[in-house]
Amino acid sequence: MIKEYENYAEDENGNRNYFSYFGSKEKAVEALKTLIDCSYCSNCSGFKKDLKIPKIENIHQKILEATSKKYALNMKIWHTCETTHCRAGWVVHLAGKEGYELEKLLDTPLAASLIYRESSQIKVKINEFYKTNNEAMKNIIECARLEREMSK
Image 1: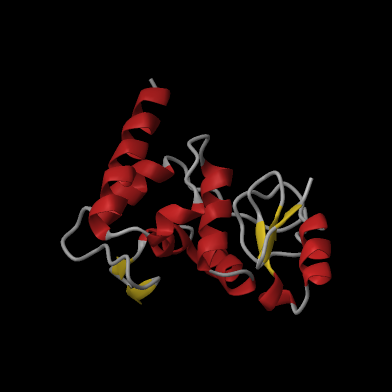
Image 2 (image 1 turned 30 degrees about the vertical axis):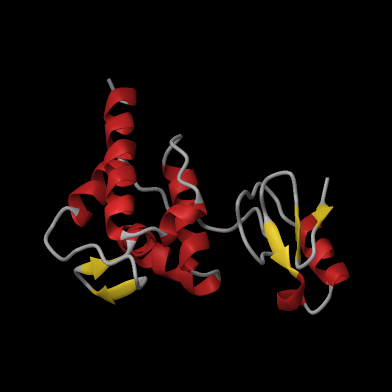
């Protein structure tokens, strides 16, 4: 079921398409109808099942390890350099060439969301990519803790 609001339409999985992005309400709604196995995305359409999504084993442990280094986490920009990224940037970076290819095809937050979904049962919503450094680290630490507990 798709609900229409003043500026956007949203489906039952939290996917949201803005009318201004698609040029009309009708096009935004039609684009939502094309999504397959997608949740909490924004301005997506024509999602393909055969999209190559990399998997990172123990993703939450690896994100924690990467972001715990001094100056490694900068939530203000996706990629600063090889050693500094935001949370979504780290996910893409740790996925390697396939991660960067997915990012180029979609965008950073969507690529990171899909990599998280492929790599772990622990859900990381796309809004986590827009938090402050401190807020992001709290959630990264919590996800790593949950992942450790689940692997026991």
